[in-house]
Length: 570
Image (cartoon, rainbow, N blue to C red; front, side, top):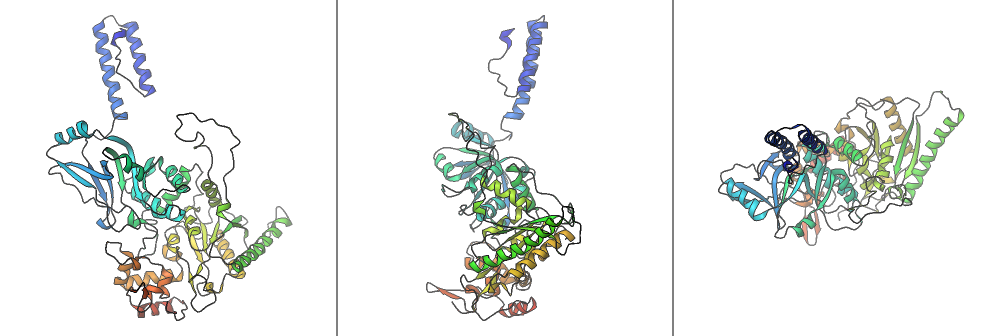
């Protein structure tokens, strides 16, 4: 009977293995006929191989490329089954007469031209199959791969929200793939210290494949992606929308999905979920945690005023808490503990004292899944923030990771740089579209007509106390996106509704567009700076100008109470 056990049969699933050999032993001990034993073993083999095929063998039943695309041609994402790659080029293999959708996509935030895979057409499927099996014999890259390009992944804001976020939102269009592990194929430059690459790898779950490496490996050698999703260029944070929201943040629930996966894939318990109000799971005497994140736009005087504000709020909180442990007296102000935070100083616990010996075949550190990195340490702080306070720039990008019912306070900055207390100065909030695109938090802003005078202690205290009262009294969730914009952001939305030509030139990312008009910040436009001033400005002997209805802008500035001084021509 031993000879009946097939030598070539190798099942990796332990359960099937156990079932198979248990049945073999039963046949050995109880069969009276070698013929009946062979028949029974044949049935077992057939059943086991069927299970094995469905579980371990490439699940696509064809070697031909098939394509599904979702969204308008301007902003579509595509799922490619059996997409080939050779000599640094995506390749579609299809059969003559096959009807394929339009499959050009944008793969990067600042790439205006679409990517279109090459196509090779065969007379019949049998010709295609012979070519694949006998000529190219590709290396299959299994499961789902998510592809995007990002040129500035050394900056965490660009890395997350111009690279990873838009690609992930594209993936959500092909549910439920966004809930499962996937691989990332990243078009990124070489960088020895870009810890965003580790975020990419952990976020996907199946690691990161650099396109530069794939390009070298694909010279004269074929690969086949079992499933590849790409098409995210106009979902980036710097892709300005007429409603001035982070693309996909509200309508595709992209902000929440992205936040939740960030915590999940970095091994952290998710932030607290509140469904209807910021006051859910809170009491009026709760101690709220506020963090002011250092910002390069803060001057030395700004920092002095901020520290004085922190001391005054914390002294009030400490005096109340020190009176009696069970003090239930009526509070004049909510209890807030304010801390000043430098993200660069947030470090994961050092566990290098634990000696772990790596083996020669370990592809990465044996402790990779077990230890924290600095980003995880930052997320632990973000998760507990009730009030997030900072100025414009990279510090604003983390607000998406706040818990439901939190508040972000944008202290703003001054443009042009170094123009404080001059006629040229105007207030700048920059990434307010991140706030309007995150419906589970509320945004507050330093007064727009006061910021150019520098940050003042009393205004900071007023904003923090306003935020704490709003949280404990309960603001509704989700927050209306328009209410999460500063006055100049609300002005822009109305301007976009009334001046369609202007709106198109700053929001439509197509080839041959004037990129100076796409390089858009609300505050520069509101205060008619550089390309937005009458007559534009001269750069290297060339006039750069973006036309719009100046009279309408002047009317709207007055409507929204935004003070404007005559610009000094650059």
